[in-house]
Image (tube, rainbow, N blue to C red; front, side, top):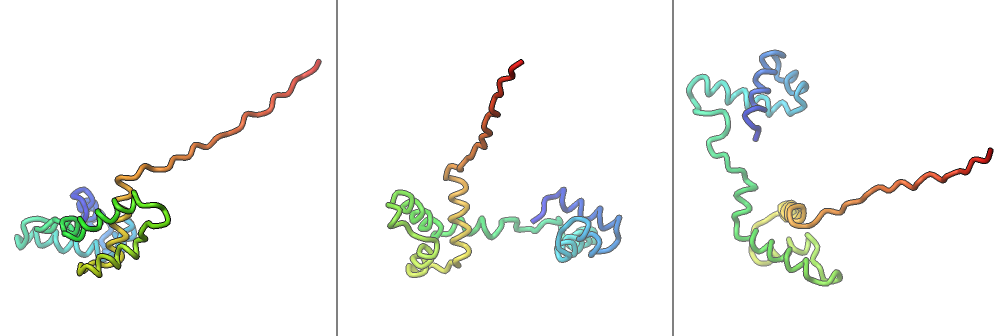
Length: 141
């Protein structure tokens, strides 16, 4: 979903360029995205719609985070962190466990949630590039 500023930019660019394909190319977005927001903009102008952005702005991902299987997945991730390295679960194994327990969840959702969890909670690795000092030469006069 685009922000209000992005939607305004799409509409302004379309008015300048005049074509959906040209607008998409200029902004680096898909033609379908341009079509969708132009359609919504026209519906707002005609009074068929109250706003350009969807009425239900909750994204699917936000809904998924409230699911009960997400809590179980967090448990698995936390257990994984304290387990010895040889006994840690892979993302595929976590998916198998959830499916075996009766949850309807895709492997890609499990991967995405595990990565989000790791990005948020795990410390990042930082590397500092070191440059060796240049050798000093002694000048003799």
